Image 1 (cartoon, rainbow, N blue to C red):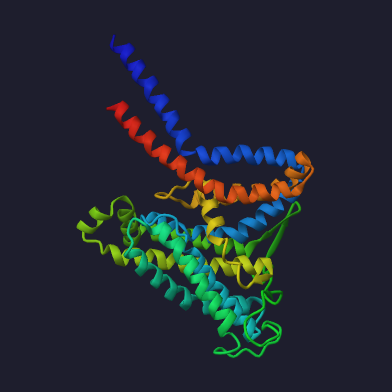
Image 2 (cartoon, rainbow, N blue to C red):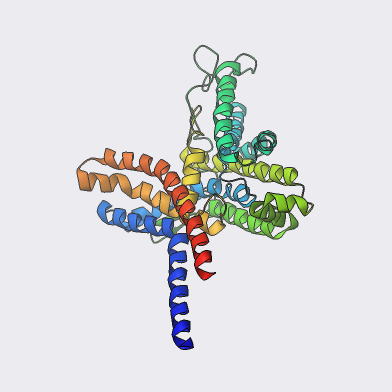
Length: 370
């Protein structure tokens, strides 16, 4: 009798364990299947796909990693990451005005953007501390507000309050920056420092090293006292406060770090692209980075470096193959383009729904196990 009960319990436990695995990895599993179908339908050469994946990983992963610390600190997905991206663009505009190119120009852009990112991060953190529990919607609104200020500065102040004598970047009327700025003087300044060619796949070694250094720094921070404070905040802010943690200061540090990393990530992104769309390059940064993180299996309460890497890989693989799959399946590449836009927004909604389902499953399983 006892043996039958034990077998029944084991079956129930294994069933719950399988359901937990399915619940925890449902999003990446879904996107692995979609990507495999997309690769098959696109009929693209694997060398081409691998080259594109390497380019997109090196271009986008730094920005996605910038989201991890606020999630860990219980502040949710940082939609205000676009404010950090604006700081990065300020650095790039500055070196364009100063006419500094190459790797020196790249480093100068990082240097110039950092104080702006620190200032923006501090201001964002102060506002988010006053809206606890509503950080994501507040961050989204802050992004729109900051975008308005950004437009005001670069459309109205450039050429009037801020003197600019470079006709290459200023509008013909002498006021406001042009819609697009050529970044050829800095393009691939990081990517081409050391480049390996392995079986036709070109690997930007220094850019990958930058990302690896960030991964090691994040791992180190997580193990420090500050990292433990972030974790404590993420688990329960009230208990963290009772434990003697200065919650407002810790949250401020988390969002400031994220903003600085976003500024640097945007510079890495744009040095690869080679063109700065002055007034909209930053607009989709938050949406795409958050979507990539969620595709990797992260949630609004938990995100890891591994999830950031997997998510960026899957999300951008889908971006590579979907236009070609759309063309082969429906005779129109534009369908693939629409699909990519749909995925960027849809994955966020889907992941949030699945996150709610995961929470329900965990509570349901606890009740079953007693």
